[in-house]
Structure formats: C-alpha cells, structure tokens
Image 1 (tube, helix red, strand yellow):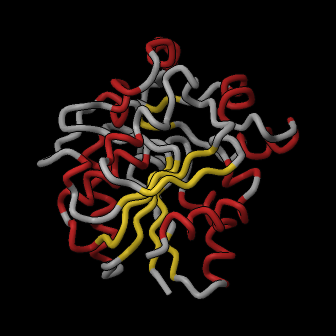
Image 2: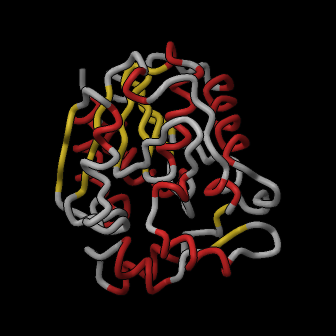
Length: 239
C-alpha cells in the first residue's frame, strides 16, 4: 500500500478531495489532503506562491511524510513541482492531474490564455483574493455536471490569492530532470484550458518521460465522479 498526498488547485481546499480519498483509504492506502497557505479562510492577504510551497513543505515535515505519491491538481502542479525539486527524496512519484507544469521563472499566468488574465485582474479584492465567476465555472470547469451540482460545488469554493498566479517559481532544474517517475492524468472533456492551448500534450510533455492516464470528465472530477478519480489516481500512482 502507498502513501498519497493530494494537493488541491486554486479556489479549493483539501476538503474537496475527501470523497476521492475515501475509496483510496478503503483500498488500504494512506491519503493526505492538505490545504495550502492562502486557501484557508482569512489567510489570503499577502500570500504568494512561495508561502504556499513552504506550507506544503511544513505539512510534510509535520506528518513525517516520505516515499509518497504526490498529486497536484491544476494550480497544485506549481506547488508539487517545487516540493519535488527541493525534497526529491520524499517523493516516490509525481502525478499531475490536469495540472500546470512550470519551468524555472514561469508564473502560472504565463501558462494560461491572456483572456483569463485580463478577466481576473479587475476582480482582485482588497485582501488580494480573486473569485472564479460562476459562468466560467459552470461552462469551462464543471461542464459535465448539471446546474444543481455546479451550484453546490461552487458554494464550496473560496477566493484565491492572486499573488500565487503572478509570482514566478524558482526551480533548480526543469521538471523533466527531476529524478522520480512522473504521471499525467488528463480528463478528456476538461476545457478549463481551451483545447487549442491544452493541458496535454502542451504541459505534460514538459515532464520528459511520463505515464499518461486518461479518462472522461471535466476539470472538476473531484465533484462529478470522485470514485472514478480515485481509480485513475491509483492507476497513475502505481509502481
């Protein structure tokens, strides 16, 4: 049995992965679902990407985590890349679920369409948080859900610290040079990034040699099909 650490994306907390963690735990695996700095209620002000990375490093140290399958969803790909670069001995395998794969000096906003940046910039609040507009959530992020589920899921989201999108990441090597094996889980109906600027293969190929796992579904499979997501994460994370 393996240890999994699932790192959420923007606007989420670890709580949204508990429905996926449950069947993985029932199969005998240990599953951690931490919440990054900046995504807890009331702690968005002045939080940048480095703060989020340090919070995950601290979680690993607090829970004495090593030899884990480290999963990152969406924005979480930025954070898991940094942790694996700094502490490669703690990670058995990296799994990116429709996640960003950065090179040194890139910010998340460098990896998304320009119209997303121009849409979000005017929405940044006084505390530095920015909220996902429901119309974008409904059509681009959770397009495999009916409106009732989309609304219930949206109610669980929270403003995300804008600085984590604009701060450049600092890495000592490209992701392809990281020593652990890597997987990319691609949901085929995910249009949170347009298919003209896709997750796979545009971002996945930055991993060099990697295992590709694909399944139907949107960017928010953790809400729409959490048991399927659990199955696919186990496929992506197996030795």
